Length: 304
Image 1 (cartoon, rainbow, N blue to C red):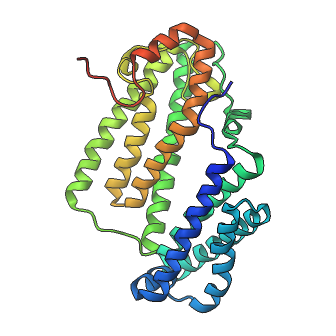
Image 2 (image 1 turned 135 degrees about the vertical axis):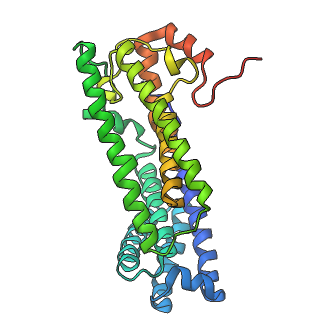
Image 3 (image 1 turned 180 degrees about the vertical axis):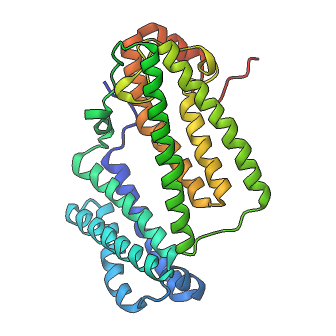
């Protein structure tokens, strides 16, 4: 059974309270500070937007925080609509990029909080269904497992370390969000990427050879792997992937790609890891419990 972090309606209502306060402060900044108005609403009519947004976004979020169920739907729907509109505006004109970014973040938060309030909890277990359900790989020989691991690795690296970062960096540039990085940052990024890639390959090969499994949840290792990089941290592939993502952001000179990678680490640690560890505990019992006591998740333990 999944026994990870539980997010209940009170936490979701607290989010709406913070959103209401942030929205109110933002509108004060829009009216009082020209730089904030230019960065977040440049090219857009301020007064008509304020007439609709203050009651629907700020007021709706405040009422949602007080437990008014209808306000949850109103605030969330309006936030998503505004985020979509500002995304189109920023992409077409290159203006108000910071406003678009803030509203996209608010829309994601509102959708998550709305889901928790409607369902009474965060349905993290939904990610472990269908093709993403956690189950052991079928016995198919190490050569075939290695081949499948290689294909999966190429696909995930191509999408999450290639395609998505390039798209994010392009959006960052188009929306006027780019912040200049020192040339040394790119060199550090190259070194970090090479080191993280080596760790990722080492981890994948070890998992395939000793565990007879692949990185996909639907083809997990048939045997508990505690050798190779797994002697030092329990999830070296995740450590490698997050480090690669940060490195790609540094090489591209994109702070938004770095944030994307760090958000990925938060999602993985909060949502995916508890489900994966529950599956490992169920399949390997005391052997996994002992391994978990001895080896940390992210940072190698220094023997004292």
